[in-house]
Image 1 (spheres, one colour):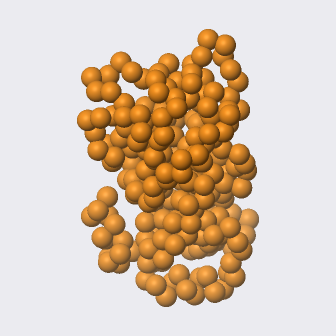
Image 2 (cartoon, one colour):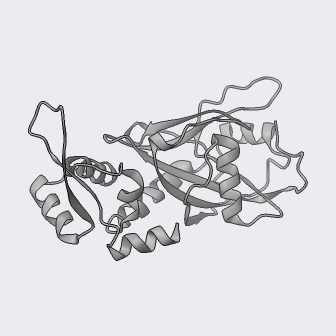
Length: 247
């Protein structure tokens, strides 16, 4: 099961981990994998993990992050933002993680420093095809996540912290929302990320004042309540244009 049959060897001391956020118009979710153990005794591994693995000796970190995502989940060509490095010497020392490392890694005792990336995707744009040591890949609500493998709870919490601090920028909403959306849908996204309820009137006043979004003539159809107006992101807004050009 260990991925050793490559032209270049894996670097045993450096890895990448990816925090992939998705939004289903109600809940913020993150992509997690269930790990295959790869040992003859088929040890049960109850811990889910972020998609991640060691880097290859011949690739840079960005290439490694894209490769690992493709190998473990089938996702490719995502815009990934490097946000933190984790190097606690005890980050791999939980007994259940040690058992997994002994079954899957050539040098299970090696100290590993990991570089973390995060990305924002529209769930409907991607289908998951787990492979490698990922037995299963699935979208899990942030509020339902409990104990993850390694230090992945810490990595996820830091990614959420960074995402919250980036909410004044365009990419979070631009990447997670459909092309057209209501203000209520956009508010749900902000509440999911901030993990708190927002005052409806204040939210709408502030978001409209920024010029980030613009109203459309189109309104909802076939709803039991008063149809809400649709909005879209204003591509003339400089912050958004800078992000589009970068990605």
